Image: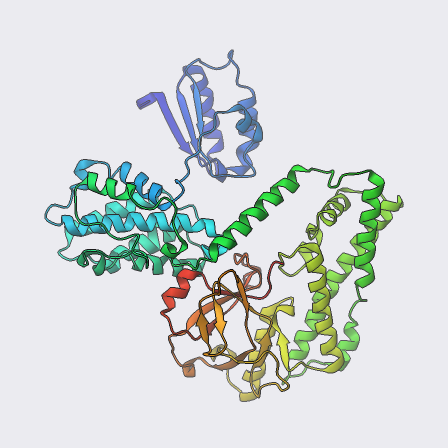
Length: 574
């Protein structure tokens, strides 16, 4: 379809009426129309749905066709999906098939393009294979969830295509390949343009450095994996590369991604969880078998059990009297603010459960909110209404309630006994406020502007301490994901087989002047509130999940741990 027989428009602000006019004309004349990026015109989708509902043999020319392109979107009209022919373009699974697709599609499959670097064939073909391997690698990492990428990105063939064309351009125009420029364009622009998380960007550039370097060209057998199963093939014809790719292992081991074998277990657990969550969704409103009476009594007992464990609200006035606002002690303010935040959550849980009990007894109407609450309680999920008022947590209902009560006890003990010697970092509602309080105390004690301060970190060898440090704070309750802590040598170390998380001993978080913090080869390890890792920027400027970056000593190159996806977590999901 060419010329005036085919029209395409990319949807966006103000494009709706133009698209509607194009469809009306095409219906009469029998031409084709393609509306691109429907997911960007969410507000116009109901209008499109109405237009499609009016299609009939009487109103449409026999040759008329309407094409729609869209990313997966919950706002895309279901009726259009049901009545239309659906096509999806997904990357093939596995490194071998991914590489094969790259070599069998344009532009690499074009003979003139493949032989487009006359006199520089070795450099071109080696780096071409390297960038295709990189493309397959970044796509395949998605299956490992947060250990692969914090946010699953839609890297696609267009990213590879532009990177390959730029690579050929640079090889032809320069005597020596400007790796820095090529790496910037590929990593920061083409692929990096999709990356919104700074830690993912660090990972992307670390992976790319393994493929865009002189050794790939100069070494006859440059290894892409420690096992040697994957390497840069010797120079050959186009058909030789296809044959080489076909002989690669069908299933890949995590080591090719620079990851520990334990990630396969994490991936299987994650896929199982998704499967069971999907099964629960298919159950609809009838969450449990049996009569309505047994369901009601079970619900009433769950609500009664949680209410019996809930303590009364914190007395904010008494807390302010005992821990007043003091210039030299910011932790007093932190305690009172934490109590206020937890009071909001306690009240939400209490009032919703009391309303549910009344609804079961027939004293109030069971509205949609209470229905949703009941449905969540029956399948052991944290109700959405609670989650909106809560700190981030991926725990099931039973563990969530136990964790919530432990946090309340932590604050109550602080109020009763005094400031703890070791703080349970995971127990805070708003962790950043606590860390700011620690820095503020130091700044006021030594009269240093707070914006000149940073943190230094020291992992101790013990899990308890009877005394608090002179400066800074002791914190505990953190877990390492993707690595373990070698307590004997005080460095990051490889995980034990089948042990996914490792508890970290006390960490001394010590404020210090940024200019005096010594540069080291330590691994900059992000700390997250939950294992999901991704979060959104809140109005305070803080991520809803990321807390702070900690420096952890290592006897291996930091790139090793970056590719492993190593991070600290405040809490686990169980």
